Image 1 (cartoon, rainbow, N blue to C red):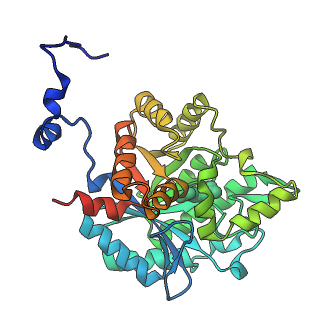
Image 2: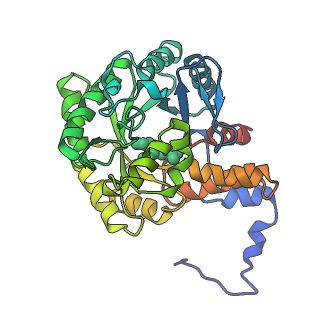
Length: 339
Ligand code: PBG
């Protein structure tokens, strides 16, 4: 409720909207490159390969990722989030490659660290979906996703990633108890320095479709679903709920999360708001692949101004309370914001 509602005609709210300088002067929210995190896909090939459902996004070689990290530094983007895209022949039922210290992601992390040191933060997902034939984030047995057995793998995956040099591990799997297990494992390995960004309120969302295309896990998940096998709904949250999101955040903080994330962002602005108000901790939001795809698809068709829509969509996430937004638009927006 505004403190001074005022009264027309002495109060005319259009007065402060007249000029660009005046609008900038009274703006409550400002977007800066430091508010953006750039998610990137790394694959095992030299040539980059476009993601069909995400116009403008490509799967990059390790060299390509190193260049992108340098670009992020130049643009003032504080961190990148790396996602590996494995060839199908490297995926297994148990996703064991996740624990290999020489896997694609670990090699990419080492290459980026070598080139950019600590100039750009490196965030890595902790989850098994890039590595499993079935595309699930956890271990699958008899049509169910096993919780505690998965957590046992995830905590080891987190240590492998930390040893490769990533600054932030981001469990995106939504298993119960994983944040505490990962914190304990990192500490036991002497890695008190590595941060945990938990995907705390992660919804079972149709908006992850293009990301799963990028990883090549879409078809596998569809086949599993057709066979009546587990659905990500058994671990990701129901979009109907927000109280549950607060409970997820509370648990993850109690277990040692340094930062929490709400995802997807655009369909959960109310959740971002509630989380930030309730806990006052670093709250991140992920504008996911499907949100990016919707804007780009309309832009490609000339139905809206893609750049303006991108900036507006991310600005309102910040207005809702997000301290930082993971978005595939990060470099484009950062370039737009440059004076
Ligand atoms: C997997 C993961 C997903 C995303 C980030 N990590 C997909 C999923 O849960 O199926 C989605 C990101 C996006 O859609 O941009 N653990």
